[in-house]
Amino acid sequence: MVHNIMIVGVGGQGSLLASKLLGHLLLQEGYDVKVSEVHGMSQRGGSVVTYVRFGDHVYSPVIDKGEADVIVSFETLEAARWIGYLKKDGKVIVSTQEIDPMPVITGAMSYPEHLVDKMRAAGVTVDAVDALTLAEKAGSAKAANLVLMGRLSRYSDFPESAWQEAIEACVPKKYLELNRVAFAEGRAEQ
Image 1 (tube, rainbow, N blue to C red):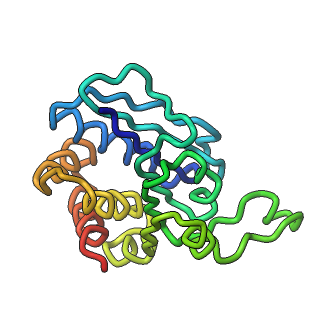
Image 2: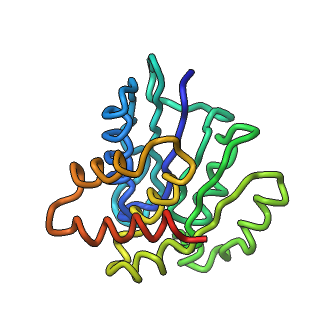
């Protein structure tokens, strides 16, 4: 059986580190893992998506529509944009942060309202967390990616020690404690 996780967001939010950490964890746990390259405009501000697939045998890194077990979204509109990739019984873990895309910045459109409520009304299981505030509480807004990984860890069968080992392996030493705290914030937040 293959499990599929999508990490979506906006360039500059740390999705690359999140996918690297997740891939490391899954390899250490003995799975065959395929992590796609970041698709989209990875420079700051563009929409990005990374696919993480794991199981006994994984032959392709690509997740098709309706196949994602979990979508981890660093931004609310990005969660709504990729919702078609979620399985019927899948889960969305979403940061409540809203980053205006270019059409909103230029005034051509307005940011859609109540997206989390609309996803829930459509029958989607949504775990919305204020990752930005929790990251700032941990010491830096840039650690929102680890807040979301902490949140994801709540829904996994992997021991917290395995997550901690992956954090230590993937995060530069000078940012290690900050990222451990951010992970803990996301894992503990009710």
